[in-house]
Image 1 (cartoon, rainbow, N blue to C red):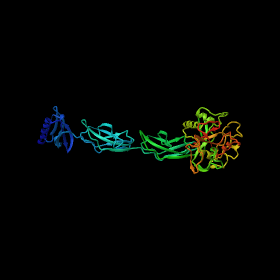
Image 2 (image 1 turned 180 degrees about the horizontal axis):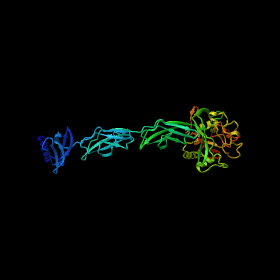
Image 3 (image 1 turned 30 degrees about the vertical axis):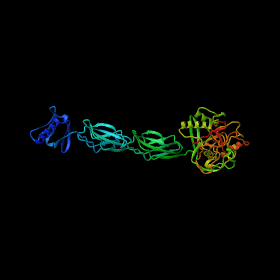
Image 4 (image 1 turned 45 degrees about the vertical axis):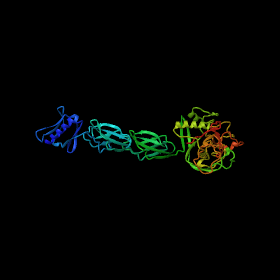
Length: 496
């Protein structure tokens, strides 16, 4: 009793003579309460025996705090109260619902806790929860990837220093066992994958571009696949979180004849298997630009598709809405009076309509296909040594172009690569070929001796035996045209 009484006298004196102080009540060596002097009038004892003696804190004659005297080690005065930072803060993923659980040790006297979060350990931490009454909290909307957390204790307007930093990497696993299977009869690819724990849906990518999103199953059918090598990847998603790409699934689609319909008009692309051939000819003088077929050189090409026929007037009109041709007896005739620049606008519109990547063939692709590719019989013209069997030219053209595919096809099933209309190629015209072996060549820079001219191939209906243009019909012969020129002998064939 004497001990408590002396403490009371000391604190009564402190309350009367000193500025704002804090009185810490210790029990078992731990501060159980800290009371501001402004909240007290006095401290006193009640009770008649050691068993029931109480230490009471009074304000306005009311007891505001009371402790069993035998449980109080001491009462100490200090100039301010130190609110300590929470300790042992941990963060972990809750397996049941894939949220993040934070927990920490309680801070003496804390009235609540504020939670702060950042995506980097050294970045700015933003408050994500305020005055949490317990010593745990669930983050139901965590950041995708790195989540760093800090906790601050709160008491009577004070905020403690930050706790230790807790870290958890909140990511979804990428889908596994992704497969892609092509059904040739249905012309579709079925993509499957293993489910990802906690994923809500999936996005499917084809050749790096988004193909389908928010798929809730583990199967997707691509019913309009491209041809050639196609790479599929899958990403898992949950809210704003997205996994990395799965390992790729690759399928190689080879269709001998690829049929495509645009605004009701169907056309066909022929598959050309890649190979190596000798391009050019040493028979002509290299002094003439029109006969610049030298030197013969080795060319190797990858697989590609080329038009079964020249682009018809009906296909051009279906894409462009108009027909620029001079000869218009039938819409199955090749489109003509189109410049190289016109062809680029047509192809851009066609690609937008089909979602594919059509283009003009390179000169090497054109010659390889005209020769019959890997099935070549070495003919002088495309498909025969008898020109009348495979071409419309001065001898049989009757003063006009003719419907496509009315003459015999070549070894690959391609029509009219000799005669009818000359066909634009992708390359700038170079006065001579390179002498070294080439792989998938295309001339992308102008030849200063030639200027703004692109390659044209195949000859046209106006070629005659008595004209130097006669040999333009041969599979190895070259010609050229200014990119803005358009004549009734100028047409095109597509490549893919």
